[in-house]
Length: 148
Image (cartoon, rainbow, N blue to C red; front, side, top):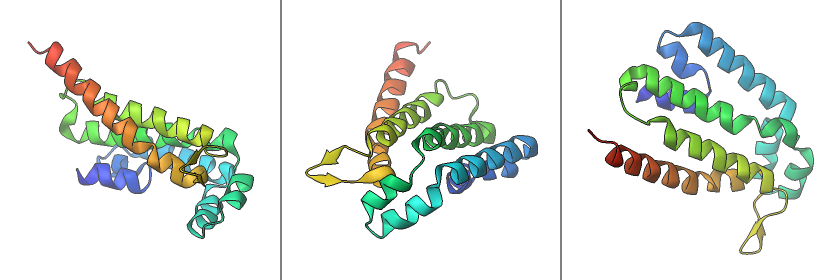
């Protein structure tokens, strides 16, 4: 579990702890490139200061849309390599959360919730909830239906 948490801290760290150094380096480089190209650190900073319009204008969405898939794929990979490769359909919650967070990124410049524009940091984070919920539910159903 600690390797999954380190992978959430920064894609690639879980792979390093699993001894998969080449994968870890690839994930770390990809994270760095996507982070820099999308201007994500600056977007996070201004979002934390409540400057959502500024965050929206500073975001390079064509790059930021790659981030959720990389982030959750690296987390799944670290978790799977940490002795969980035998768990059936383990990927489903990770896939659905990556998809829903990407949808959150897509709609973040314009979608308001109760009149509040959340922007490219807070809306995708909020979209984790339905993504993980649907993924866990579908995994549960699939595992129960195909149980031997």
